[in-house]
Length: 345
Ligand code: KG4
Ligand code: ZN
Picture (tube, rainbow, N blue to C red):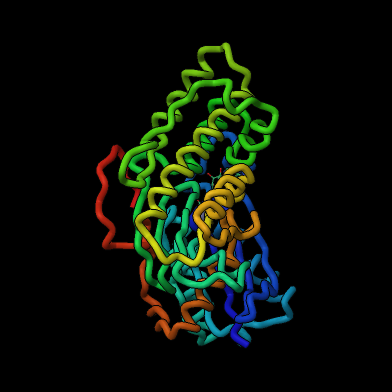
């Protein structure tokens, strides 16, 4: 039975996991860094890298012990090699290289976005290619046609902020903590989603791209205005995000016939209102809906190990020990460039 050790350290979660070819997560461990970054309201790269360096090796030890395995039982070591905060990525990748060298195991340098893109297949054995994927995280907001392992066709991206970033900024404006996504979701439960007039950037436009910068500015103005309850602002923001997602995704679905499913992944996919809205869209579109459990949506190492297993199963060659960490690494390098203030790769 194939067994892969996965390592994740591209942002603010240090994680290790052992996953096998039967989709079993044999052991996993995640150490978050909320306390370290909370005073700054965002992830500080240097603090993140140091925390990864301190925690990663004990986490790897722990998952091997919990699974009753040794390095010799692993068919490969898979680590996130980008995109992400370069200091953290280097900690994970260099650790993986050392283990690969010491244990004479193949090294798999995994694209973090590929980890998110394939994570739904770890949780859902019936999910077949090709599927339509909405990938929504702290750094990315993309719609992709996932044709197979290593075959990703990007139809849409954000022309400014990622959706998770918009959630985090909304939380910062409302002063409800970091990371912001779960805090906004919680506060929104107590609010009226239609009480605060907020824009739906790019809704109705012919291409399925996203924009959230204007929505974030409108949230700031609504908050400064002082006449709205915070819960109404949170609910209004979340509703605007849902309306944008549904409009943009349905435009993209029209451009990709023949999909087996509509799938959502990435940290923001943990949001229940967003999941429910997408499930509704899938039903209307006669598509299956698939979303990993919330724990597999936010950053984790099981998805990195799983991407490694998918690569091995597809006969993809391992990476050389001098493979580089990549701060930017698009899933679809051939995707058309879009114009915007700060286009994300
Ligand atoms: O995938 P992820 O863990 O890290 C990146 O690769 O970026 O995504 C983190 C993002 C953060 O912006 C966080 O606020 C958001 O996902 N997030 C959520 C929820 N849980 C996490 N956004 C909305 N609702 C949630 N429940
Ligand atoms: Zn991520």
